[in-house]
Length: 136
Image (cartoon, rainbow, N blue to C red; front, top):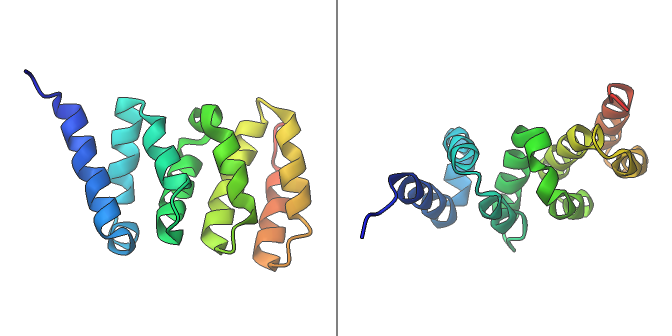
């Protein structure tokens, strides 16, 4: 039986991320995960991170979604759920992704408009910026 090298590499990257998500998030490995997800088309990997019970793993999923931009459209419902997170970085990345996907689905703009009233002024400012720069 042949082992798919692409899949094996992705599995190793994901295992490293789960083993020590804090280090993975901080040491530049995010780009490696992003490249592997793009190459494999495995958005289910991103969904697993988005649905994790660990804050840093959700942040990894949110960042990856943000970088995927419009490519994350098929998993947008999982990203929208993160807007209510207590982690600033997770919300920030989720809003960036929502803004990208909203160019195809204007109904997502409501999440950005709701975020303009976010109690964190950084998030509220980002939402205003994203709305002002949206192509919708």
